[in-house]
Image (cartoon, rainbow, N blue to C red; front, side):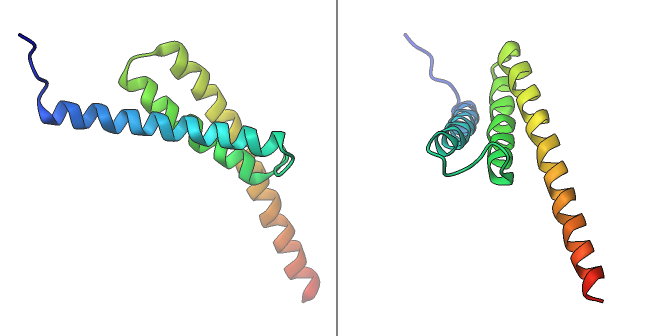
Amino acid sequence: MEQKKPLSTKIHMDLFLALGILGMAAILFAFLMEQRHKWSGDDLIYDFTNFVGSFLLVVYGLSGRAWPFVILNTIWALYSLKDVIAKLRMMSQSRASKTRSRS
């Protein structure tokens, strides 16, 4: 006779599976947008989408203790986050210089 898992365990597993699917979909979407030349690898939206997707995959990987998967996606997330921060800083500096030149 098969034992049923408690409802809280099932919901917990379903939540992590949903996060994994969303993460995978985000990375795949960014890849497809870049391949179709809708986004560039230099675009903020590309890096941000990759960061969100890889972060969600890290959470998913941690839930299953899939360490190679966690390591790969942690590196991917950190690299994407570095690019997001650099681009946001450039945008902020550009706005500041435009504001100063108007004064």
